[in-house]
Image (tube, rainbow, N blue to C red; front, side, top):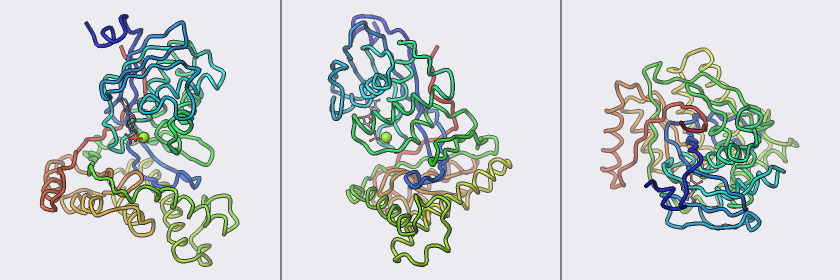
Length: 376
Ligand code: ADP
Ligand code: MG
């Protein structure tokens, strides 16, 4: 007997999967109307589900101990607490949007690694959203416009039910990405464009180095950086730093100027990477990844020793470029590595972490993959 029927005493109506993501470049600019360039990866979260005629949600995950049982009417800010908020919140947000959502039985089986900076949270949300779309006949999953609406419901779930202040990058990547491409996301207007990105075709791979550390300093620093760039924009009399130029920064105090310089130069680096990828010059983006890391570490001050070590070691062992990804103060870095050097780079990173007395990092091959879909 399968796990779903063991849990719920009935068969699932289908299986839906949503991928994790890696942001190639464009870090800490989504709250400044900036550009980012995520791609979906092969690691994915799978949900089995069946609709119900009542409004009960029964949620299980093989990755979590807690079982969740809640009426849709009871879902809201902070309810249910814990992991169930990600899935239940999506149903809630769709219903708030006027869609005819009812209850369901849902089991999460496979998962994107949790908390590795690969966005397991958006993967649960987006797989649940697609399941609801099919089971309740919402008709949103078949078009980019419909998928944008599903993505917006997932963002609401995470912001309003879970209470995590995230932008829309993760959900856009999980629902709109295509294989062999990165997704250029303009957070000023939410528009997206597929940009060719097929590292294997150029003899390369994107290696994710999960340092498995998270420094407590991280708490509060996100809000602090966000406030700094908003203050910088306001001081310059601008709605955001999008479109601001470096020569405008002279009047700001030194720290604000450095924060703003990161935002402005990072947005420019995304544009440069996109131009190179459009021209088929994927092997040339390495220095821009390095410059992104230098800016995040120097001007934005969100790196840490472990992330710096991962990047410098990867470069010294043959990576074309490397940078920290995500919020910083721990989490993961990425390195663009010639396939022929992949084992050497991985070995060097492991050895460097061991020599520094650090935990062994997890190394993950990130391959640009398709968006969320129904399976079978
Ligand atoms: P990430 O970078 O992986 O998205 P988050 O902190 O945003 O990290 O989200 C991780 C949380 O998402 C987990 O603590 C859990 O509550 C929820 N989650 C992710 N994947 C699963 C899963 N497979 N089953 C249940 N909950 C999950
Ligand atoms: Mg997340």
